[in-house]
Amino acid sequence: MIEVINDDGRQVLEFATTAGRVRGRLVSTPDGDAVASLGIPFARVDERYQPAVRPNEWAGVRDSGQGPIAWQDPGRAAGLSMSERDCLTANVWTPAAPSSSPRPVLVWVHGGAHLYGSNAHPLCDGARLAAAHGLIVVAISYRLGALGYLRLDHFFGADYGDAGNVALRDTLSGVEWVRDEIAAFGGDPSRITLMGQSAGGVAVATLLAESADSAPFQRVIVESATAERVHTLDEAAEVTNELLEELAGPHAAPELLLGSSAAELIAAQERVVDRWKATRRGPGIPFRPVLDHRFVHDIPLHAIAAGAGAHIDAIIGTNRNEASGYIDLLRTGESDAISALQSELVADGHTVTAAEYIEACARDDGVTATAVDALESYVADRLYRKPASRLLDARRNASGTTYGYLFAWQRPDTAGWARRAGHSLELPFVFRHLDDSDAAREELGEAPPMALSATMSASWAAFAATGRIQEVDDPEWPVYESQRATIVFDETTKIVHDPFAERRRLLEVARSTAGMI
Image 1 (spheres, rainbow, N blue to C red):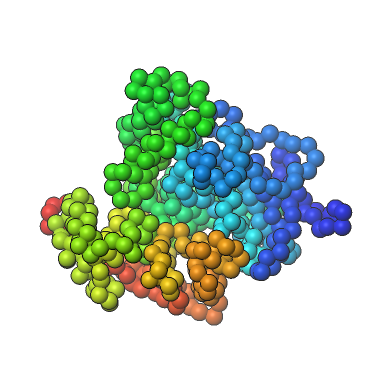
Image 2: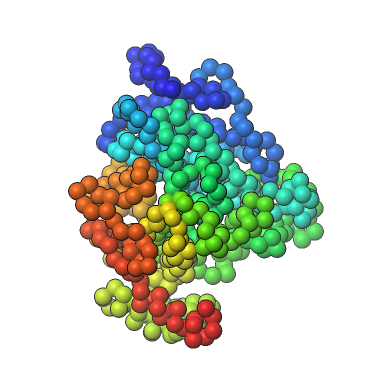
């Protein structure tokens, strides 16, 4: 229940949660007013590597303010304080305008390679999205890296059997908190959409694969992620051993993982990450969900193909240039790119040549393809597009609605800017932060298309409200299904069926011919 009070002449809103009252603050945005209730504890870390417990109750009214974030490389923490015990918080943005009925809810799970990030990134602040579309936006946090994904039962027994997936358990706890508490903020617990990007999307896809009829969410949005990025128990044990060696040498006692400071663990973690990054193009992600048969029971893609989460509606997609962070599109030479592309194809077991893949790119895109562009495209295929396509295909028989999308907009000054439609570039469009910060201008240039932001944010909001994507005064977008209908978000948004068909067919035929289906 919302209570409007007068505090020193200012409008203040209070919300009653089961742990105590929360005081939000009124924020004005170009899209209208919203109420920000930040840093609300949804759980508490009572013991390292163990599932979180209920937060402590508090007396009086808790003022809104960003809470501490999960431990990570301090250089990535944006100056925010870090805490093991108190990092599990929710930021809630509600429209200030009254509503006669409960509002749909969008729960945001941030990315960051399972290592970095928080629910406080300014380009993912939910105030504008909430105000513009009348929905409630919640951003939740979770433990990261070696403190969130570390197998320990092979050292310490069954009491630490959950350690490998406490980050996923944190995420689920956050969504359950939203389900149980969001009515106090005016939200509808029967219309909760769980949305994640990159590592956050991996978490969402994994929770989708483990969802039952009683899941605390009804819809998911998976952006630039995979449902295949999990460790086996043996792989997870190897990562734990690597971390221990980086922490204190080859004969280090496992107990150091329990007694070392968070700062020491994170420093060792970063050395492991550097080692992984040196092996191949792409993100070095040694810490990830673990196939522990306790919380994660199968590779998520396999579970989804077998029908897990089939009743849940989904939007799944990627950006066109997901790999532009790993391929220097401005400085890589053509001959070097051809050699690198051929090496990538061979490493993945393909029998096609770099020239054949470059030609497939040209046929798909209708323009002459450079070897550099093709190299970026192939790495994007391997890391993001193909996993997203496999996830979409796995849901072809789902009873829930499934949409596929491709974010394709790039800055017009691409000649001097190599990101193009890069990884995470869609986020300020979804959250409507194209024009309100230096960070947005650095990413998007001086004149990003406001109409595209309006389209994407309205589409995501409509999906959260109804399970359908529909533009005002336009026909409903088609679902993915057998024709691979894909919503391409660009200066002009359109539907393309199977937008990378030539690439897909080339690689599928090559694998089939080589007996590697």
